[in-house]
Length: 195
Image (tube, rainbow, N blue to C red):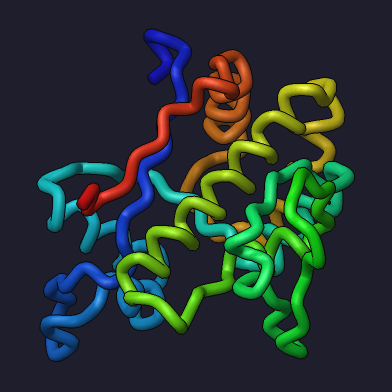
């Protein structure tokens, strides 16, 4: 929100049932990106919520890892209840042995964002994973706020090849400037569905 200098984040549940174009028919929202890239996913989100969003930036998980490594890691609180849940995808080993605030490198942050608890209800597991994703993103925002603008733009240039977007570099710079002029500590976060 450029007028008010605010940044907001809405997490949309990936398992929403949506109608995709042609023979794809009814499917989970997350399959839209698989079948038609971020453009098809954006169309599905717009249809689902009656929106007209035109711009997108898709950052895959390897780019997220690179970004977090490029900014020197992020400080994220890990709770006792998450210790057995957060594991590396490659070898299923636990990432953390004790609760508390940890400085996560890219691989640890990705494991934190991706892990699901398969022992509990799937909806609750996804809600917990979304919470971890929000905590990592908020930590990234906080870390980026502490960086000099020149460092942010040089870091952006290094990871931009890993981002799929229809946003011009000039518009992206404007968005980044707006986000970092906002109060990152008060980043408004919500998810849908909320219950």
